[in-house]
Length: 352
Image (tube, rainbow, N blue to C red; front, side, top):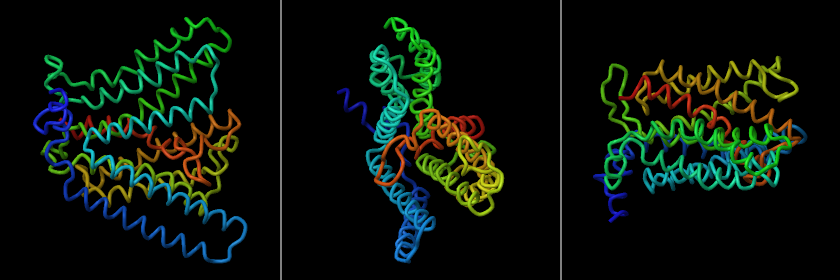
């Protein structure tokens, strides 16, 4: 009975995404991404057949590895979409778990923190995504709680309750050495890898409207794909413009490859791509451009923050996602930092 209520299209989690789970706009957007990845793959193969040496060869290899990562990300996304909203929430929950594992591995803690980490990994992380899954249309078997909007809970659970619990639990363990540093590490990892990233699947729960409060007829999946796409492109365009016109490095001791020219160029270019894809969203072109620019700012902040953490820990990458490329957290740092900002702007201006 519990399972039937959970997956019944008329009630529960899946009802939150309504009957337009994958609209025609979503299929067209996915087709555009497939075409772009196909062209990128062909271009990478053509370039790799040239006799290249030194930096050019390294850049081509990095480009091919990046395209390989995007193919893998697209395949995982499609698998999640097949399993409907519940599948997408579980997918991002697993991504958060893995990213948090990389973060904690990169910033080692002490034996006294093991029980605190148990709570972080196996209580707070699943609980955050359970609350995201319940959203504004929880299943009827919750009784009176089925009439609640669980945004009130998942928006504060980690920054309030988990942030208070972590230092208290660490103190109970009795290990006072580097106490503030250890607590801050765990809190930062949970905030970045779980709380912030969880706002990406939370986009599926919004009741979207266009400017003027006209109900939007598209699918929330399109909005989620749109966000992830522009967040990823923001990092790509920043590197591209940095190579083409980069002169003034933002923070040489943190990341010598990120320049103000690359950042500004990425804001404009990402905004233009977002405007060109506005048909897949409830945004007008100028609104999509603005959100694309905002996502670029947050993507840059995420990349710089993770670079600073890696420099502090003396590591190059957070892990190994595919051979020759960086870890999972390196791939999603832009999404982690941009997701809560994009979500709340969309919720405030384009939802009811």
